[in-house]
Length: 310
Ligand SMILES: O=C(O)c1cc(C(=O)O)oc(=O)c1
Image (cartoon, rainbow, N blue to C red):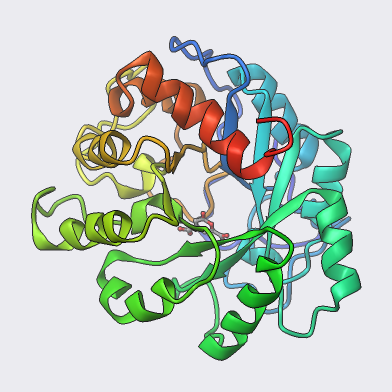
């Protein structure tokens, strides 16, 4: 793959660029697999980063994303608006349009968005909005604004993607359970995997999914959640062992409400940048049967993002 650029922007100090020589996965993805969580960054020279951003990344273009898709063996992408672009969805829309139907999007919008602008996003392939509660990534948005947005996008048949950390779930519970749409949780609600998988923190997340049939989860980002590794680098096909029990529990309990994505280009990793081919090799450890893999990688994302084809 070509190397990342930075344009006129200066990257956040310590920024790790995405991995340029991903291996070919040993795990054969089922035909029609969807990478249901990935991002594009800029390029900043064409799609400038938002003034309110909390980090400045290296560029990660649509061409580079599509090259990774083909290299890993995915058929489609779901591109999620990265917080470094704020509510300016132009890079996302451009990538979705350029994909000729092979990418759908999750946007970030403010209450000031017009109905016509929402329709334009829909025409480009957007099927959801992202509400972010991770304090290092975004400024606070009042709940009444988010509920108003949720009510409007529900009418388009879209869903809400939520990103939060496990310690904040109790406080956000009432808001999340009041959302009128399908609700997709990013990265399993970021459990602390050094705590027991059958302890109270993860039990609350399981209860959230069990009691609310509209809640889905991305069982993604082991590279972010893992404390003990080993890292998906240097041919390691048994990476992130400490995350496996958490993700596997969710896949096995809720096989029809889970999604998987690479999270390429992996914003804000501090420790290492994974080899995305080896990340794909993580999948059979959390979805051990062909039936679970088909649901996770094909049937579920198709039902949510390409229902007209599912
Ligand atoms: O944990 C993160 O830093 C992170 C950031 C973003 C974003 O900036 O949009 O998206 C993710 O999925 C994860």
